[in-house]
Image (cartoon, rainbow, N blue to C red; front, side, top):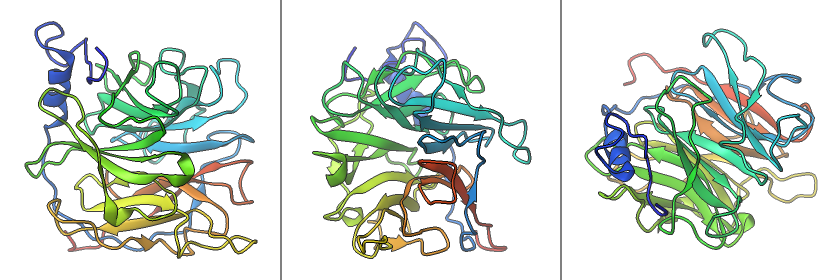
Length: 327
């Protein structure tokens, strides 16, 4: 059933309810969280050459809620690669241990085209990502995949297109799902535009029938330049994205590079404040792209082509701590 978030295997009763309604029920559950205050971001750390990072492009990181599964897109040479760029996952036994070797998610998820920039629902049942595979609406579209077992990184079912509410003939990608536990409907933030270089930040609301409604421009986060890969904190009060807008770090040619920016708001019912550049601790004259904020809000994963890496774009992380008494 195209245009709906189809969950044909169900969440609790695999046969009694349509997939769209099952998705709706699964995604709206949760607990509200108060805004927290954090320290500044620390110096970024490369996640390792020969493990997470390769001589190819490794980008679009996303981490599971428990912090034990790291997903990303890569065009590395691999016997099990499906095409231009595939989704990979690396595991670790605890958050204090190093990441294991990445594994390709396989042909159920990956296609001969570009599959990249995943994100997840907080319950871990749903993965959203972008792809230019056949069967889409346009250039690059948003797709979703469901799994019944949230700790099985290879249980993802065949992806389906999210339909015309969010997808256009141009670029639609880099999704970030927000539960919206303050009484509103769940929201999908993402990038969209006639091309990747002209993308803005948009948001679509989950409808009662389980589809995503017509997207609305998030004007306060968008600029005349490319604004991409929004990643929203679990409480909806902080959002990260990357952009080459005015105020970004100039490269060697004096042209703004892609930097990571952040915007905040006091409540989910208010507009976003003016975006702020994360500054020279995180950003460089090279490109910093595809930020992803961890479930606890204390680790920001991103990709960069800075020359200290392993080749192409590498995955990095920067951390901050929660300040005592700042809830």
